[in-house]
Image 1 (spheres, rainbow, N blue to C red):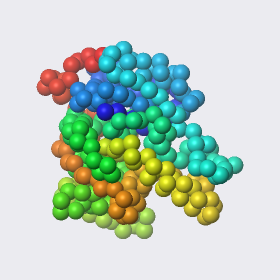
Image 2 (tube, helix red, strand yellow):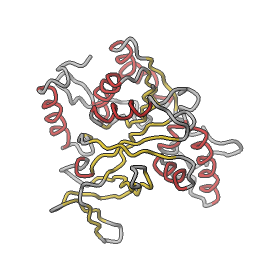
Image 3 (tube, rainbow, N blue to C red):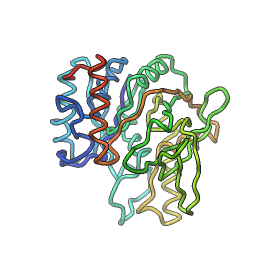
Length: 302
């Protein structure tokens, strides 16, 4: 099984980037804990999706460490390039960045040959999600994928609002839809989302949300390629090509709507950790320290 890490958003200067801020007692990053948990769950290959201009420092400061720490782990790199487009489609002159998370995953389509999980580089997902996805991927079925959902109340920041994809599911536990909600904050008895119109939407906090933690098979890539081509044609026709983004959850939504794929919604009680705001850092360190003191993680990972 392969772990695909969406890391193309990382810049060439690492010192101040949240993805590589030390959070563990020996300088470990959130990505270090993700890789550690994935290897323990049985993943034997890791594919980093990065930008070409940061390849050298990324290999030295990130990938080479994992190759040394886990000799059995194959570490590979692919590049998200703005010019990686469908045939006969040109890049808009005003475009300055790649096309979003769906486009990023497409960059791995020629390299990933096994069942695979997808994560963000700068999120801590907890161990149980990797175990759930590994168990799922050990019994692959064409067109049948999975996503680990987190309870909304476990994914908030005490220091500001967050955006989350609120899921809807069938009675049998399959994903129906993901709806992006912005400006989410804790409130008395639940969670409130502030709409652009000023209207507030109330959530209990028990809702499951998407944090880009997926399980796919390689047969997902042709579906994604088709949707990306349709997306590019649309944004050119509507003159949105300098700003539009091709998001992975939106692509999954469309494929579910077309009944092309099914996505099992798996639930974990683990909290999500992230560095949305600078003030989140001390709390993330506290939570990881608890897990180390509880014997789950060693005090020195690698």
